[in-house]
Length: 122
Image 1 (cartoon, rainbow, N blue to C red):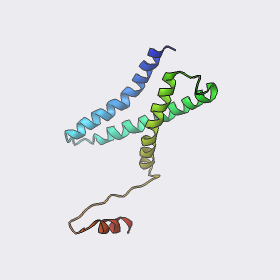
Image 2: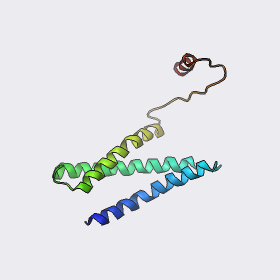
Image 3: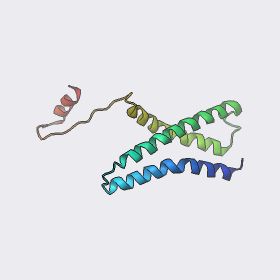
Image 4: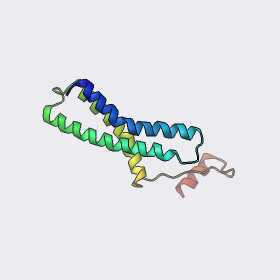
């Protein structure tokens, strides 16, 4: 397959989640009441699935042909999706509640950071 054809296919695959992320952020900046944060979250989750599939396909190609014999495009493709897989994996862990985080609500009664840590760990 031609190099330009691969770029067009990648652009089409990435268009929908990137559009959702950008549109959701614009609507969040406008203080829209129809929950545009779900567009951002869903776009990021789709990017996580795309990056996982792309990394797995790239690993199969690297195992089959070797790192030195694959093209520069495939190397950049692998590195891009591998870097993108890290934050989206963390996002998926939070989304599936496999990893939880706690919110700290600072009240006027909290005087120091020690009090904040006591609230966090108790």
